[in-house]
Image (tube, rainbow, N blue to C red; front, side):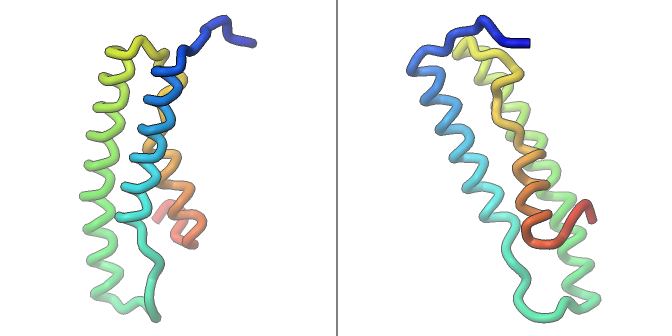
Length: 96
């Protein structure tokens, strides 16, 4: 169903800057593996995933709250979790 919502330039700039922020954050937390994973590195990665998950939830909440200030509909807010999972899939990690 097509939308009748018309974005103004400031709203579009905000959405673009938030997507850039998410992309940068995800690239900083999901780095390619170097070498063969050891048992210790797997455990550390799983522990770090939990911390990263909490950061993703907090950032998504911040984005949704800020979108209300800019009068942007929630369906157009960039999705932190989807971006993070896409990066993990590209690196071969899937939904560990």
